[in-house]
Image: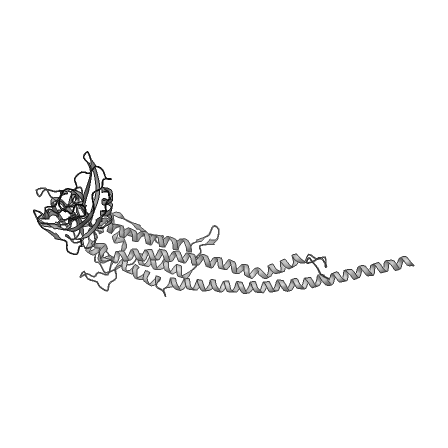
Length: 482
């Protein structure tokens, strides 16, 4: 006899009974799920701790880097004439700069054509980059450059010639200038400087004459061969300036290799009688920011650890890392480092001497005035933060920032306490998942087993009920027949 629904044969609420029995078996799984949620939260918290500690370690490293204390800022009293920027290697000093003239690019222009759609002839234009002598009677190609030949076909317009020149990467830039007389082809050097002038030699395929004022010859510029049909409007020049009276020359108006670590940009001529002063001084703002960035990184790490390990007596709940030994030890270590000392400097022995004052809650309070005062004594300040000894060389004594850096390096190492703690959590999470799967398999088998048992009970009870009904009918019939 087949039973379609559990409990029908026995008149018992068997489905409810099975459901409750299975729920009892699942209780350990529910507990494991709760435990996994807690472990996941801890792992996430330690991931953020690692990020905060990495930021603190990096901020401390910047304070141990001697380049931080060599940072300079450069200013010009007249940026519109001479602007300046400082980079690595720049040293403090003052410079008076005069500009005789700026660097310029050679520029030539053609005679007027009716329009940019006018044809110009046929042949080959050969463009070479180099330098002219004083009277343009001789042209010297630039070392390392190669002449570029451009074929002009019959029917090419002035605009098409412009495009071919620009597409040839010949070291020049072509454009069309329209005025009252018509359209003119203008060609200029891509770069400024005497060695970046150019020569245009034409092989006129129309009339075969390369230096007349017709056909493609009209676009030649070669005064050395008396074929300079195009007119020169701007001579190629080097910039000429003086720095503290010393004459310098540059193909560009940007001087990046004249003074160590400085880039000067010449914007207009400056008379020698009234030079522009450029000042290079220690960048106290950048140094102050490095110190305050360290304090911010420290406070962020400390506040996060404190928040994660705190206990709230009002609702009797704790943070994800409440009671966690690794997190508590980190807080203790950070407090000890913040209140510690160094003998690297005879002036600044503690963070509070510099303007980073430890507070009761473990954070650092920043005193801008004390930092400014400390920055007035850079030699001692960089000793206090780094590993510089009294002789000014790298020594065994660890400065205040170096102590934080070393602690951070150890903490964040592959075998450091953070790595060990997160590895432990990952192991527990995996074990938890494996145990859940084992219990899920066991509960599934249990449910199948008791369902089969209740199914069998239903079948047996249905048979007994049927037999009972049959017996009752027979007894009733016997009673009526008497």
